Image (cartoon, rainbow, N blue to C red; front, side, top):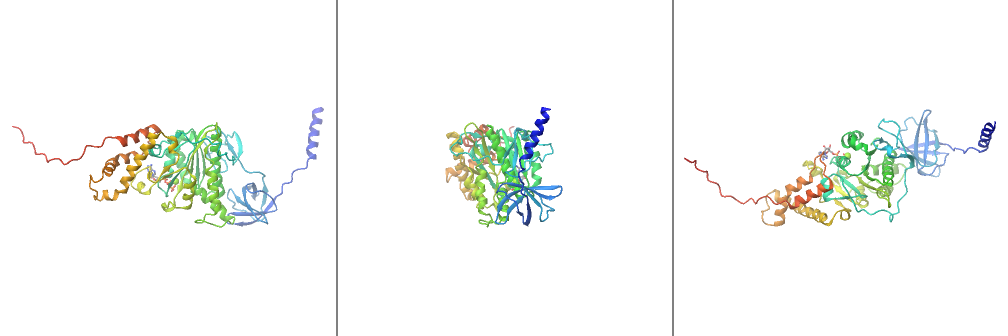
Length: 460
Ligand SMILES: Nc1ncnc2c1ncn2[C@@H]1O[C@H](COP(=O)(O)OP(=O)(O)OP(=O)(O)O)[C@@H](O)[C@H]1O
Ligand SMILES: [Mg+2]
Protein backbone atom coordinates (compact mmCIF):
# COMPACT_ATOMS: atom_id res chain seq x y z
CA UNK A 1 0.00 0.00 0.00
CA UNK A 2 2.77 2.36 1.05
CA UNK A 3 4.60 2.30 -2.29
CA UNK A 4 1.36 3.09 -4.13
CA UNK A 5 0.70 6.04 -1.85
CA UNK A 6 4.23 7.25 -2.38
CA UNK A 7 3.80 7.13 -6.14
CA UNK A 8 0.48 8.94 -5.98
CA UNK A 9 2.09 11.62 -3.80
CA UNK A 10 4.89 12.03 -6.34
CA UNK A 11 2.37 12.48 -9.18
CA UNK A 12 0.45 15.00 -7.09
CA UNK A 13 3.59 17.02 -6.33
CA UNK A 14 4.53 17.03 -9.98
CA UNK A 15 1.13 18.25 -11.08
CA UNK A 16 1.41 21.17 -8.64
CA UNK A 17 4.55 22.48 -10.38
CA UNK A 18 3.43 24.60 -13.31
CA UNK A 19 5.18 23.58 -16.56
CA UNK A 20 7.70 26.07 -17.94
CA UNK A 21 6.02 27.76 -20.86
CA UNK A 22 7.80 27.22 -24.16
CA UNK A 23 7.32 30.44 -26.06
CA UNK A 24 7.20 29.56 -29.70
CA UNK A 25 7.71 31.98 -32.51
CA UNK A 26 6.95 32.07 -36.21
CA UNK A 27 9.14 32.55 -39.26
CA UNK A 28 8.25 35.88 -40.86
CA UNK A 29 10.97 36.48 -43.41
CA UNK A 30 13.69 34.72 -45.35
CA UNK A 31 16.36 36.83 -47.04
CA UNK A 32 19.26 35.03 -48.68
CA UNK A 33 20.43 32.63 -46.00
CA UNK A 34 18.91 34.38 -42.99
CA UNK A 35 15.57 33.65 -41.39
CA UNK A 36 13.73 36.17 -39.28
CA UNK A 37 11.45 34.94 -36.49
CA UNK A 38 9.04 36.86 -34.28
CA UNK A 39 7.27 35.98 -31.11
CA UNK A 40 10.03 34.10 -29.30
CA UNK A 41 13.08 35.12 -27.32
CA UNK A 42 16.49 33.50 -27.59
CA UNK A 43 19.99 34.78 -27.00
CA UNK A 44 22.71 34.98 -29.64
CA UNK A 45 24.44 31.60 -29.94
CA UNK A 46 21.40 29.67 -28.73
CA UNK A 47 19.67 27.14 -30.91
CA UNK A 48 16.06 26.91 -32.09
CA UNK A 49 14.15 24.15 -33.83
CA UNK A 50 12.29 25.20 -36.96
CA UNK A 51 9.45 22.95 -38.05
CA UNK A 52 9.88 22.88 -41.80
CA UNK A 53 7.21 20.21 -42.41
CA UNK A 54 5.15 17.91 -40.20
CA UNK A 55 7.91 15.29 -40.22
CA UNK A 56 10.97 17.53 -40.71
CA UNK A 57 12.59 20.03 -38.41
CA UNK A 58 15.91 21.84 -38.76
CA UNK A 59 18.12 23.34 -36.07
CA UNK A 60 19.14 26.97 -36.46
CA UNK A 61 21.45 29.23 -34.50
CA UNK A 62 20.52 32.73 -33.39
CA UNK A 63 23.05 34.95 -35.15
CA UNK A 64 21.57 38.39 -34.50
CA UNK A 65 18.47 40.36 -33.58
CA UNK A 66 16.62 43.58 -34.29
CA UNK A 67 13.77 45.45 -32.62
CA UNK A 68 11.27 43.19 -34.32
CA UNK A 69 12.72 39.75 -33.86
CA UNK A 70 15.67 37.39 -34.04
CA UNK A 71 17.81 36.32 -37.01
CA UNK A 72 18.46 32.65 -37.44
CA UNK A 73 20.90 30.73 -39.60
CA UNK A 74 19.84 27.14 -40.35
CA UNK A 75 22.30 24.27 -39.96
CA UNK A 76 20.77 22.28 -42.77
CA UNK A 77 18.73 22.68 -45.95
CA UNK A 78 15.34 24.33 -45.53
CA UNK A 79 13.64 23.30 -48.78
CA UNK A 80 9.87 23.43 -48.33
CA UNK A 81 9.93 26.03 -45.54
CA UNK A 82 6.77 28.16 -45.50
CA UNK A 83 5.98 31.55 -43.92
CA UNK A 84 4.62 31.12 -40.41
CA UNK A 85 6.62 27.93 -39.67
CA UNK A 86 6.96 27.26 -35.93
CA UNK A 87 10.20 28.19 -34.14
CA UNK A 88 10.89 26.54 -30.78
CA UNK A 89 13.85 27.87 -28.75
CA UNK A 90 15.88 24.93 -27.43
CA UNK A 91 17.49 26.84 -24.58
CA UNK A 92 21.27 26.78 -24.25
CA UNK A 93 23.93 26.22 -26.85
CA UNK A 94 24.45 23.07 -28.79
CA UNK A 95 26.19 20.03 -27.25
CA UNK A 96 28.71 17.85 -29.03
CA UNK A 97 30.03 14.36 -28.25
CA UNK A 98 33.59 13.84 -26.98
CA UNK A 99 35.52 10.78 -25.84
CA UNK A 100 38.03 8.17 -26.98
CA UNK A 101 35.14 6.33 -28.69
CA UNK A 102 35.29 8.99 -31.40
CA UNK A 103 38.68 7.84 -32.64
CA UNK A 104 38.38 6.27 -36.08
CA UNK A 105 35.11 8.09 -36.76
CA UNK A 106 34.09 10.62 -39.42
CA UNK A 107 31.59 13.24 -38.22
CA UNK A 108 29.74 16.19 -39.69
CA UNK A 109 29.70 19.64 -38.11
CA UNK A 110 26.82 18.70 -35.82
CA UNK A 111 28.77 15.73 -34.41
CA UNK A 112 26.68 13.15 -36.27
CA UNK A 113 28.47 10.21 -37.90
CA UNK A 114 29.00 10.27 -41.66
CA UNK A 115 30.71 6.89 -41.88
CA UNK A 116 27.66 4.65 -41.43
CA UNK A 117 29.35 2.87 -38.50
CA UNK A 118 26.47 3.38 -36.06
CA UNK A 119 26.00 5.96 -33.32
CA UNK A 120 29.08 7.57 -31.76
CA UNK A 121 30.27 6.27 -28.38
CA UNK A 122 30.44 9.54 -26.46
CA UNK A 123 32.00 9.73 -23.02
CA UNK A 124 30.30 13.09 -22.48
CA UNK A 125 28.35 15.78 -24.32
CA UNK A 126 29.92 19.18 -23.94
CA UNK A 127 29.39 22.73 -25.17
CA UNK A 128 31.25 23.81 -28.32
CA UNK A 129 33.33 26.34 -26.40
CA UNK A 130 35.74 25.12 -23.76
CA UNK A 131 36.54 28.52 -22.30
CA UNK A 132 39.83 30.33 -22.72
CA UNK A 133 43.11 29.43 -21.05
CA UNK A 134 44.89 32.07 -19.02
CA UNK A 135 47.90 32.93 -21.23
CA UNK A 136 50.19 32.83 -18.19
CA UNK A 137 49.04 29.31 -17.35
CA UNK A 138 49.96 27.92 -20.76
CA UNK A 139 53.05 25.75 -20.97
CA UNK A 140 55.76 27.30 -23.16
CA UNK A 141 56.73 25.63 -26.43
CA UNK A 142 59.99 23.80 -25.81
CA UNK A 143 59.76 20.34 -27.37
CA UNK A 144 59.81 19.53 -31.07
CA UNK A 145 57.08 17.53 -32.76
CA UNK A 146 58.15 15.14 -35.49
CA UNK A 147 55.85 15.67 -38.48
CA UNK A 148 57.62 13.15 -40.74
CA UNK A 149 58.45 15.72 -43.46
CA UNK A 150 62.23 16.14 -43.86
CA UNK A 151 62.24 19.76 -45.05
CA UNK A 152 59.96 20.82 -42.18
CA UNK A 153 61.67 18.78 -39.46
CA UNK A 154 65.11 20.03 -40.44
CA UNK A 155 64.57 23.61 -41.58
CA UNK A 156 61.21 24.71 -40.13
CA UNK A 157 61.09 22.57 -36.98
CA UNK A 158 57.66 22.52 -35.38
CA UNK A 159 57.23 22.78 -31.61
CA UNK A 160 54.54 20.98 -29.65
CA UNK A 161 51.77 23.52 -29.23
CA UNK A 162 52.80 25.64 -32.22
CA UNK A 163 50.25 26.90 -34.80
CA UNK A 164 51.45 27.01 -38.39
CA UNK A 165 49.89 27.73 -41.73
CA UNK A 166 50.68 26.09 -45.02
CA UNK A 167 50.12 28.99 -47.47
CA UNK A 168 49.57 28.27 -51.16
CA UNK A 169 47.47 28.88 -54.21
CA UNK A 170 45.03 26.27 -55.35
CA UNK A 171 46.42 22.86 -56.38
CA UNK A 172 49.97 23.40 -55.11
CA UNK A 173 49.91 20.54 -52.61
CA UNK A 174 48.48 21.76 -49.27
CA UNK A 175 46.12 18.83 -48.79
CA UNK A 176 48.70 16.26 -49.88
CA UNK A 177 51.20 17.72 -47.38
CA UNK A 178 48.66 17.48 -44.54
CA UNK A 179 47.86 13.92 -45.62
CA UNK A 180 51.54 12.95 -45.40
CA UNK A 181 51.76 14.42 -41.92
CA UNK A 182 48.78 12.41 -40.70
CA UNK A 183 50.57 9.23 -41.67
CA UNK A 184 54.06 10.10 -40.52
CA UNK A 185 53.68 12.28 -37.42
CA UNK A 186 54.54 11.05 -33.95
CA UNK A 187 51.51 12.85 -32.43
CA UNK A 188 49.29 10.44 -30.46
CA UNK A 189 45.97 11.82 -31.68
CA UNK A 190 45.12 13.54 -34.95
CA UNK A 191 42.02 15.65 -35.43
CA UNK A 192 41.31 16.60 -39.03
CA UNK A 193 38.85 19.34 -39.97
CA UNK A 194 37.98 19.28 -43.68
CA UNK A 195 36.18 22.57 -44.03
CA UNK A 196 34.52 23.82 -47.19
CA UNK A 197 36.65 21.72 -49.54
CA UNK A 198 35.39 19.44 -52.31
CA UNK A 199 33.16 16.57 -51.19
CA UNK A 200 35.18 14.14 -53.33
CA UNK A 201 38.33 14.94 -51.36
CA UNK A 202 36.83 13.82 -48.06
CA UNK A 203 36.73 10.17 -49.11
CA UNK A 204 40.08 10.40 -50.86
CA UNK A 205 41.66 11.90 -47.77
CA UNK A 206 40.28 9.20 -45.49
CA UNK A 207 41.11 6.26 -47.74
CA UNK A 208 44.38 7.36 -49.30
CA UNK A 209 46.00 9.84 -46.96
CA UNK A 210 44.93 8.49 -43.58
CA UNK A 211 44.49 4.81 -44.42
CA UNK A 212 43.23 2.33 -41.80
CA UNK A 213 46.18 2.80 -39.48
CA UNK A 214 46.02 6.60 -39.56
CA UNK A 215 42.26 6.67 -39.10
CA UNK A 216 42.49 4.53 -35.96
CA UNK A 217 44.18 7.39 -34.10
CA UNK A 218 42.20 10.18 -35.78
CA UNK A 219 38.84 11.87 -35.71
CA UNK A 220 37.76 13.50 -38.96
CA UNK A 221 35.22 16.31 -39.00
CA UNK A 222 34.09 17.02 -42.54
CA UNK A 223 31.91 19.80 -43.84
CA UNK A 224 32.26 20.12 -47.60
CA UNK A 225 31.57 23.21 -49.69
CA UNK A 226 27.88 22.41 -50.23
CA UNK A 227 27.10 22.42 -46.47
CA UNK A 228 25.48 25.53 -45.02
CA UNK A 229 27.97 28.19 -43.87
CA UNK A 230 26.89 27.60 -40.28
CA UNK A 231 27.64 23.90 -40.57
CA UNK A 232 31.11 24.72 -41.92
CA UNK A 233 31.77 27.06 -39.00
CA UNK A 234 30.54 24.47 -36.54
CA UNK A 235 32.73 21.79 -38.10
CA UNK A 236 35.82 23.97 -37.51
CA UNK A 237 34.72 24.56 -33.95
CA UNK A 238 33.93 20.90 -33.35
CA UNK A 239 37.38 19.89 -34.62
CA UNK A 240 38.93 22.43 -32.23
CA UNK A 241 36.72 21.22 -29.36
CA UNK A 242 37.73 17.60 -29.91
CA UNK A 243 41.40 18.58 -30.01
CA UNK A 244 40.89 20.50 -26.74
CA UNK A 245 39.25 17.46 -25.15
CA UNK A 246 42.19 15.18 -26.03
CA UNK A 247 44.69 17.85 -24.94
CA UNK A 248 42.98 18.07 -21.57
CA UNK A 249 43.41 14.28 -21.30
CA UNK A 250 47.17 14.86 -21.52
CA UNK A 251 47.61 13.84 -25.17
CA UNK A 252 49.80 15.44 -27.81
CA UNK A 253 47.32 16.29 -30.52
CA UNK A 254 47.95 17.30 -34.12
CA UNK A 255 45.06 19.40 -35.42
CA UNK A 256 44.90 19.80 -39.19
CA UNK A 257 42.39 22.28 -40.55
CA UNK A 258 41.90 22.44 -44.31
CA UNK A 259 41.19 25.29 -44.76
CA UNK A 260 41.23 28.45 -42.62
CA UNK A 261 40.26 30.45 -45.71
CA UNK A 262 37.04 28.47 -46.14
CA UNK A 263 36.29 29.05 -42.44
CA UNK A 264 36.70 32.79 -43.01
CA UNK A 265 34.50 32.60 -46.10
CA UNK A 266 31.74 30.82 -44.17
CA UNK A 267 31.84 33.55 -41.54
CA UNK A 268 31.76 36.16 -44.33
CA UNK A 269 28.60 34.58 -45.79
CA UNK A 270 26.87 34.67 -42.41
CA UNK A 271 27.98 38.18 -41.49
CA UNK A 272 26.94 39.65 -44.85
CA UNK A 273 23.60 37.83 -44.65
CA UNK A 274 22.75 39.48 -41.31
CA UNK A 275 23.64 42.88 -42.69
CA UNK A 276 27.22 43.52 -41.52
CA UNK A 277 28.98 45.87 -43.95
CA UNK A 278 31.91 44.43 -45.91
CA UNK A 279 35.32 45.93 -45.20
CA UNK A 280 38.49 44.45 -46.70
CA UNK A 281 37.95 42.57 -50.00
CA UNK A 282 34.34 41.87 -49.06
CA UNK A 283 35.24 40.44 -45.64
CA UNK A 284 33.30 42.09 -42.78
CA UNK A 285 35.21 42.99 -39.60
CA UNK A 286 33.73 40.08 -37.63
CA UNK A 287 35.74 37.66 -39.79
CA UNK A 288 38.99 39.15 -38.55
CA UNK A 289 37.70 38.99 -34.98
CA UNK A 290 36.81 35.31 -35.25
CA UNK A 291 40.05 34.09 -36.81
CA UNK A 292 42.23 34.64 -33.72
CA UNK A 293 39.50 33.15 -31.53
CA UNK A 294 39.68 29.92 -33.47
CA UNK A 295 43.46 29.82 -33.73
CA UNK A 296 43.99 30.63 -30.04
CA UNK A 297 42.15 27.44 -29.11
CA UNK A 298 45.19 25.48 -30.25
CA UNK A 299 48.49 25.58 -28.39
CA UNK A 300 49.74 24.14 -25.14
CA UNK A 301 47.44 23.68 -22.20
CA UNK A 302 48.09 24.41 -18.54
CA UNK A 303 50.48 22.24 -16.51
CA UNK A 304 49.54 18.58 -16.64
CA UNK A 305 47.64 18.74 -19.90
CA UNK A 306 48.91 17.91 -23.37
CA UNK A 307 49.38 20.05 -26.45
CA UNK A 308 47.59 20.94 -29.67
CA UNK A 309 49.98 21.52 -32.55
CA UNK A 310 47.91 22.91 -35.38
CA UNK A 311 48.24 23.41 -39.12
CA UNK A 312 45.65 25.72 -40.69
CA UNK A 313 45.94 25.80 -44.47
CA UNK A 314 45.54 29.21 -46.07
CA UNK A 315 44.54 29.59 -49.69
CA UNK A 316 46.33 32.54 -51.24
CA UNK A 317 44.01 33.55 -54.08
CA UNK A 318 45.84 33.82 -57.37
CA UNK A 319 49.06 33.11 -55.42
CA UNK A 320 48.64 36.57 -53.88
CA UNK A 321 50.45 36.51 -50.53
CA UNK A 322 48.79 39.83 -49.61
CA UNK A 323 45.28 38.39 -49.52
CA UNK A 324 43.54 39.82 -46.38
CA UNK A 325 42.98 36.38 -44.84
CA UNK A 326 46.59 35.37 -45.56
CA UNK A 327 47.73 38.65 -44.00
CA UNK A 328 45.61 38.17 -40.88
CA UNK A 329 46.64 34.52 -40.59
CA UNK A 330 50.34 35.36 -40.90
CA UNK A 331 50.00 37.76 -38.00
CA UNK A 332 48.22 35.34 -35.67
CA UNK A 333 50.03 32.09 -36.47
CA UNK A 334 53.46 31.10 -35.14
CA UNK A 335 54.87 30.44 -38.56
CA UNK A 336 54.07 29.78 -42.18
CA UNK A 337 55.11 27.16 -44.68
CA UNK A 338 54.82 28.75 -48.12
CA UNK A 339 54.27 26.35 -51.00
CA UNK A 340 55.48 27.62 -54.36
CA UNK A 341 53.62 27.06 -57.60
CA UNK A 342 56.86 27.30 -59.52
CA UNK A 343 58.39 24.41 -57.57
CA UNK A 344 55.20 22.35 -58.01
CA UNK A 345 55.31 22.99 -61.74
CA UNK A 346 58.89 21.74 -61.80
CA UNK A 347 57.65 18.55 -60.10
CA UNK A 348 59.52 19.47 -56.91
CA UNK A 349 57.34 18.09 -54.06
CA UNK A 350 56.61 19.01 -51.34
CA UNK A 351 56.83 22.42 -53.01
CA UNK A 352 58.08 24.20 -49.86
CA UNK A 353 59.69 27.57 -50.52
CA UNK A 354 62.21 27.48 -47.67
CA UNK A 355 63.29 31.07 -48.33
CA UNK A 356 59.77 32.45 -47.74
CA UNK A 357 58.80 30.10 -44.89
CA UNK A 358 59.48 30.51 -41.20
CA UNK A 359 58.84 28.64 -37.98
CA UNK A 360 58.86 31.14 -35.16
CA UNK A 361 59.13 28.44 -32.50
CA UNK A 362 62.16 26.72 -34.05
CA UNK A 363 64.80 28.51 -31.90
CA UNK A 364 63.04 27.21 -28.77
CA UNK A 365 62.81 23.57 -29.79
CA UNK A 366 66.10 22.61 -31.45
CA UNK A 367 69.68 22.69 -30.23
CA UNK A 368 71.88 25.65 -31.26
CA UNK A 369 73.90 23.48 -33.66
CA UNK A 370 70.75 22.44 -35.53
CA UNK A 371 69.59 26.06 -35.72
CA UNK A 372 72.96 27.22 -37.08
CA UNK A 373 72.96 24.51 -39.73
CA UNK A 374 69.41 25.37 -40.80
CA UNK A 375 70.50 29.01 -41.17
CA UNK A 376 73.56 27.98 -43.18
CA UNK A 377 71.35 25.93 -45.50
CA UNK A 378 69.03 28.89 -46.05
CA UNK A 379 71.93 31.27 -46.68
CA UNK A 380 73.52 29.06 -49.32
CA UNK A 381 70.15 28.30 -50.89
CA UNK A 382 69.21 32.00 -51.06
CA UNK A 383 72.60 32.85 -52.53
CA UNK A 384 71.92 30.44 -55.37
CA UNK A 385 68.38 31.75 -55.98
CA UNK A 386 69.61 35.37 -56.10
CA UNK A 387 72.04 34.46 -58.87
CA UNK A 388 70.01 31.76 -60.55
CA UNK A 389 69.28 33.77 -63.71
CA UNK A 390 72.96 34.60 -64.24
CA UNK A 391 73.97 31.00 -63.64
CA UNK A 392 71.32 29.52 -65.90
CA UNK A 393 72.23 31.72 -68.90
CA UNK A 394 75.93 30.96 -68.37
CA UNK A 395 76.78 34.57 -67.48
CA UNK A 396 78.34 33.56 -64.19
CA UNK A 397 82.02 32.69 -64.46
CA UNK A 398 83.08 29.97 -62.08
CA UNK A 399 85.63 31.20 -59.58
CA UNK A 400 84.37 34.82 -59.43
CA UNK A 401 82.71 34.35 -56.04
CA UNK A 402 83.58 31.40 -53.75
CA UNK A 403 80.16 31.59 -52.03
CA UNK A 404 78.28 31.29 -55.32
CA UNK A 405 80.63 28.50 -56.37
CA UNK A 406 79.75 26.64 -53.19
CA UNK A 407 76.03 27.27 -53.75
CA UNK A 408 76.20 25.97 -57.33
CA UNK A 409 78.08 22.89 -56.22
CA UNK A 410 75.70 22.14 -53.29
CA UNK A 411 72.46 22.83 -55.14
CA UNK A 412 71.77 19.31 -56.51
CA UNK A 413 72.22 17.90 -52.97
CA UNK A 414 69.96 20.57 -51.51
CA UNK A 415 67.23 19.95 -54.06
CA UNK A 416 67.32 16.22 -53.44
CA UNK A 417 67.17 16.87 -49.70
CA UNK A 418 64.08 19.10 -49.99
CA UNK A 419 62.13 16.58 -52.07
CA UNK A 420 60.26 13.69 -50.57
CA UNK A 421 58.08 10.99 -52.10
CA UNK A 422 54.47 10.61 -51.08
CA UNK A 423 55.18 7.39 -49.21
CA UNK A 424 58.56 8.35 -47.78
CA UNK A 425 58.83 9.31 -44.14
CA UNK A 426 61.77 10.90 -42.32
CA UNK A 427 61.76 11.15 -38.56
CA UNK A 428 63.28 14.07 -36.69
CA UNK A 429 66.77 12.64 -36.22
CA UNK A 430 66.95 11.33 -39.81
CA UNK A 431 65.96 14.78 -41.03
CA UNK A 432 68.66 16.43 -38.96
CA UNK A 433 71.25 13.89 -40.09
CA UNK A 434 70.24 14.62 -43.69
CA UNK A 435 70.73 18.35 -43.15
CA UNK A 436 74.12 17.74 -41.58
CA UNK A 437 75.16 15.57 -44.52
CA UNK A 438 74.11 17.93 -47.31
CA UNK A 439 76.01 20.74 -45.64
CA UNK A 440 79.14 18.81 -44.88
CA UNK A 441 79.42 16.26 -47.70
CA UNK A 442 82.77 16.66 -49.47
CA UNK A 443 82.45 18.48 -52.76
CA UNK A 444 82.79 16.41 -55.92
CA UNK A 445 86.34 16.37 -57.42
CA UNK A 446 87.17 19.64 -59.22
CA UNK A 447 86.45 19.53 -62.93
CA UNK A 448 89.84 20.82 -64.18
CA UNK A 449 90.51 20.67 -67.90
CA UNK A 450 92.37 17.41 -68.67
CA UNK A 451 94.79 17.19 -71.66
CA UNK A 452 93.22 15.08 -74.40
CA UNK A 453 94.37 11.48 -74.04
CA UNK A 454 96.23 9.99 -76.92
CA UNK A 455 94.92 6.66 -78.12
CA UNK A 456 97.21 3.91 -76.90
CA UNK A 457 98.84 2.14 -79.86
CA UNK A 458 98.02 -1.55 -79.98
CA UNK A 459 100.84 -3.64 -78.56
CA UNK A 460 102.52 -6.15 -80.77
N1 LIG B 1 54.11 15.43 -52.59
C1 LIG B 1 53.53 15.30 -53.78
N2 LIG B 1 53.99 14.39 -54.66
C2 LIG B 1 53.41 14.25 -55.87
N3 LIG B 1 52.39 14.99 -56.30
C3 LIG B 1 51.88 15.91 -55.50
C4 LIG B 1 52.44 16.13 -54.20
N4 LIG B 1 51.74 17.13 -53.62
C5 LIG B 1 50.81 17.52 -54.52
N5 LIG B 1 50.89 16.81 -55.64
C6 LIG B 1 50.05 16.96 -56.83
O1 LIG B 1 49.35 18.21 -56.76
C7 LIG B 1 47.94 18.00 -56.82
C8 LIG B 1 47.21 19.00 -55.97
O2 LIG B 1 47.57 18.83 -54.63
P1 LIG B 1 46.56 19.23 -53.45
O3 LIG B 1 45.21 18.67 -53.67
O4 LIG B 1 47.25 18.87 -52.18
O5 LIG B 1 46.52 20.79 -53.63
P2 LIG B 1 45.83 21.86 -52.71
O6 LIG B 1 46.86 22.92 -52.49
O7 LIG B 1 45.23 21.23 -51.52
O8 LIG B 1 44.71 22.41 -53.67
P3 LIG B 1 43.31 23.10 -53.31
O9 LIG B 1 43.63 24.46 -52.84
O10 LIG B 1 42.64 23.14 -54.64
O11 LIG B 1 42.65 22.24 -52.31
C9 LIG B 1 47.75 16.56 -56.39
O12 LIG B 1 46.60 16.01 -56.93
C10 LIG B 1 49.00 15.89 -56.89
O13 LIG B 1 48.85 15.54 -58.24
MG1 LIG C 1 43.26 21.06 -50.82
